Structure formats: structure tokens, C-alpha cells
Length: 263
Image (cartoon, helix red, strand yellow):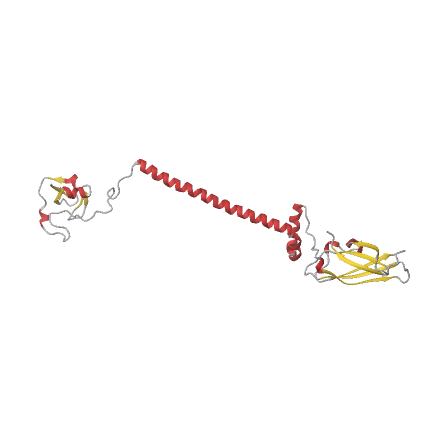
């Protein structure tokens, strides 16, 4: 069936078929001014305009509407969504956001836990290796001391007995007072850091090299007045120890001296 419609823009009338009307739900484009309009709303009983008997545009046949595809017409390409579909779409977006939010929270929580574990490990290492850290990094010792004050611990000097050696020793008797002897021990700190003052074990022996007396000497026994035990023996320095002993009734003929750090 053929109908007559009129362009509302340029008032040109032309024929349209039912098939043409069904193609885009009644929307057509004018072959003269290219206006897109609803042909069903502008139907006429008159004959087409005489102008359409002339060839106005090569691509548009005379007496026919322009049937090129009509783009960007609201409501033509997509059907309007229902309220239920819109609600469903919003729910899907909400689900996506809801799923992403816990992931972000878990990620930041994981980072926070990792930092806390790292700090705990660092604090534990500082506690167990405080002596070595204080010896090798003297500038860090004040911080370690303050840290230990919170934990009721102390940053003592290292006690590496294998790096604290006896270079020489001598036992001299007093020619004027035979019952007194003087023990002279030269100790050398081979470490590249200061160490705690060591303790000494002296064993006096007889002619058969059997022990007749044994005594332990701690830093407080041999340090001179004014010397601070906390300062220790400096790196690569000697420690000169002299002890005057009363050997009444012992009459030793030999000795053994041993350096150690008490447990």
C-alpha cells in the first residue's frame, strides 16, 4: 500500500510504502532537505509535490524518500529499558563495587600486617644482636641503650675471648719480702671494636707441676683507681695487668694463667 506524506521542514510531499514505514517504525528522511520525521504523523491524501518529478539528488530517486540508514535517532537503535532492567543493572554495578571494596580493604590490611611483622622482626633482631650492633655501629649505641631501657636489658660490650689473647705473662718474687709475688700479664684486644675487660684464672704449682692454689681475678680486682670498667679495652689495644699476691706457706715454683669471660 502506498501513502503520501509531507516533510514538516520543507513541505515536500512524496510517496511511502508500508514496507518503508515499517523499516524504521515510521521514521523517514526527506529526499530534499534530509529532515528525519515520522511519516505516519504527516500523511496526506494529495499527490506528491511536482518538485519530486525533478532529479534533485543523484542518490535519491524521484518520487521516493531517502532510504539511507538513519543513525543517532533517540529510541531507534535501542529499546527503552524497563524499570526492572534498570534496577537489575544498578544492582550489578553495586555488586561490582561491593566486591571491589573488600578487596581494597584486604590489600591495605595485608600491607599493614606486613609492615607490623617487619617492625616486629627488626625489634627482635635489635634485641638479640644489640651487643654486636652497639660494638660495630657506635653511633647506634645510644638508641639501643634507650630501647633496652624499655625492655630492662643492657647493651654490654662484646666478650669475644678468641679475640682477646695473652701476649705475655711473668711471675716475679719480691727479693725483700719473699712471701709476696707480682703477676704481670699483657693482654691484647685483636678485635676492631672495644671489648669488655676479661677475667683471669691463676693457678700456682709446685715442683711436680701440681696445683697448690687457684684464684680468679675479675676486672674490679686489677683495674686501677679511676679506670671505668664500662669503657672496656679499646680496639687493637693492649691491657697491662699487674697483681701483687701474698703466697705465705705456699712456696710455688710455677704457675698457669688463663683468660676467660664468665658465663
